[in-house]
Amino acid sequence: MQAEIAKLAVRRSEWLRGIPLVGLNSVKAALRKFSDGVRGSNATTQQLATDGNPFAMMMKMAYIDAGREGSFLKELFADIEASLKKRDKYSRHYDYDGVGSFFKTTVEVTKLPNDIFVLGLNAAYVGDKVEVSLAEALGVERALCWTATNLVLPSVSGLFIADMLFIIESLAKVVDLKGLTPERAVSRMKDKIVEDGFRVSIPIFETEKFAVTMGLDDVESPMKYQNGNGTLVWKINDNSVLGPLHTDWQDETKFLDPLMKFTVFKKTKERFEPTFLISAEDKKAMRDLADTIVSAFQ
Image (cartoon, rainbow, N blue to C red; front, side, top):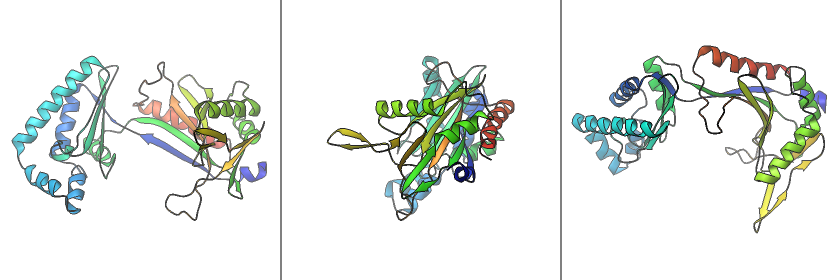
């Protein structure tokens, strides 16, 4: 079992989200640039018009009204300022009421210490590609929210196999797990599953700046429900976890690769505190920790 796992692939992933800007005036300038048009900023309208949506085609023609777009931005800026006086995050989704680039687009602004604001954009059909394009146009690197090390698990007869003895012992060679044993990790995972009823992640260690969780990903739910009653379908013992694989969404004749995912987050004092990393130094430190976890399985 251990020799088999040792040969398996380890993949890295990370989540970049939000454009960090200094001062609220910089946020307004960025939104003006987005309104003027960057690559993909009108993709939602163009797609709907291509699909023959008559309202979208009408909206597309109406966007040449610069006065209307200026009025829209003025209202948006006032809304953002008023909201951020009361709380640290502004969020609004525009549907057909969104003008120009803002058609069917969500705008988020998060206030951080030291007059830093993180601007987030997400649009129908294209997701965060509009945010990526704006960041490139501004020459600003997006914030890093988390990094992950994904260990591909072995599978037999439609079941994934997570050898916790191998996983915990391998990790303990490269990071300080503070005495975490395979049995304790499995017990925490089982307790969390019974409590929450779905796939879970458990904390496994911390550094001065970061917290690391471990959890199964791209596998079927551990619980099966019938008439409101849940039954545990994963097989859990002291040193291992087994369970059904998840069917591939794109090809139902195949299964997704089952993963044990180790996610590195910025440590926060509050549960819902933003976890944006902005400085190159902090981003490197997070990625270096993920690389250290990768080395445990190579």
